[in-house]
Image 1 (cartoon, one colour):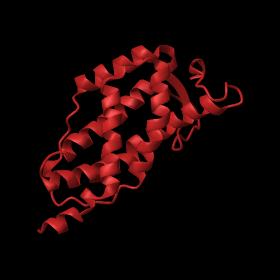
Image 2 (cartoon, helix red, strand yellow; image 1 turned 45 degrees about the vertical axis):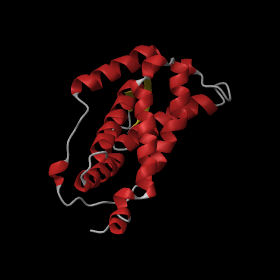
Image 3 (cartoon, one colour; image 1 turned 180 degrees about the vertical axis):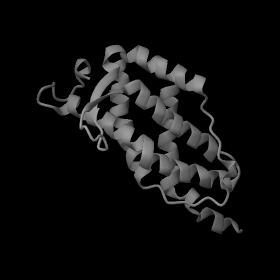
Image 4 (tube, helix red, strand yellow; image 1 turned 90 degrees about the vertical axis):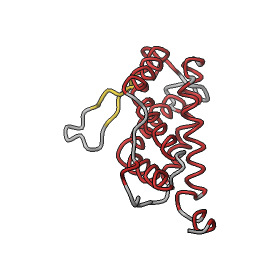
Length: 184
């Protein structure tokens, strides 16, 4: 395959590269989250999560030729350490309530910012590491899987978090223009 053909492939499209950049910044923030207080975390997430969602929604559909290159990189121990760090910073502001669309009882479900952010982080970090492999098959699988996970997993988590943050930022019951952390 010629160089021009390779560069025209979907895995090298601006949509993928822009998503990769946003995902890398998100992961770096999460990996350094202990440097920030809860207000800084909510402020960053209020700005970063919409970008992640929009960039995820425009990823190209890619069909991998070979699924053997698929790997997971974030270990259970790394996930747990990240979760515990975020939860310890957020304390009581970690929990929120939301409705799931597929819940037949239509009852509120308790959510956790730490759990949701760590799940999103895991999907992003696995994507980044796999995408950075030199094999085109690895890049195809990375793009295919992150789009599938967007549809079924991390996209929902972003929407749930944004809904709570939006309400707390812009609701008439809260101070306009500043995140009311106590209400989260």
